[in-house]
Amino acid sequence: MPRGATVITSKRPQLIALRGAAPISDRGSVPDLADAADRETVERTLDGDTEAFAGVVRRHGSRLVAICARVVRDRHVGEELAQEALARCYSNLGSWRGDGRFRDWLFRIGMNCCRDYLKAGARAERPAVLAGDELSTARDPESELGGRQLMAALETEIARLPPAYRESFVLFHGENLAYDEMHAITGVSVGALKVRVHRARLMLRRALGDLLTG
Image (cartoon, rainbow, N blue to C red):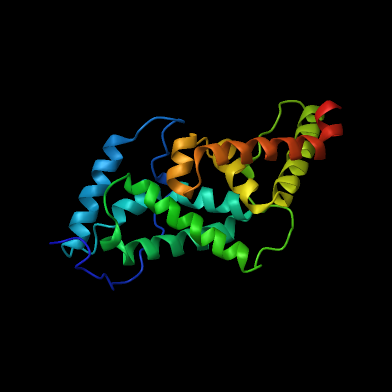
């Protein structure tokens, strides 16, 4: 069946079994097996198998939630945006050209959902609401207290970064993506991404100066 000839109108894919989903590979590596599975899933879905898309959710759902949550600084909103991204992906599978990794295309849809959310002004500046295990803890009480204070301040300052800088910073440092992966997801050139990450670091260092040197 020619790609683009099918319009999928079935029920929205659900974010099921996200915590058991396979993690993304380390920075710079290529998950060939996952991409091959994704391509097979796309073909099966376009051929009418309405259950096949669950494989995409299992492979990429948890990381999609993590990316969205870090960009908008809210875990619950991140889950909603990831659900919307999966729904858009499912409804528009026929438009995927297959000239890159399917995962990158899905994550780009997720980034666009985040950008739409932020542009709408729905996210007022406030401390991040993320899962507790996303903050590292130290072993002794004094160090733990200092570490928590630093992490809380860092989360607050990341939320204050310009959206483009925050997006690049969390993809590179929070999600451990390589610049070429970030380019595939965001559509921003590698050179511009490097500049954004560098400027974000400088802004955070200035904002956290006393805590970093104390």
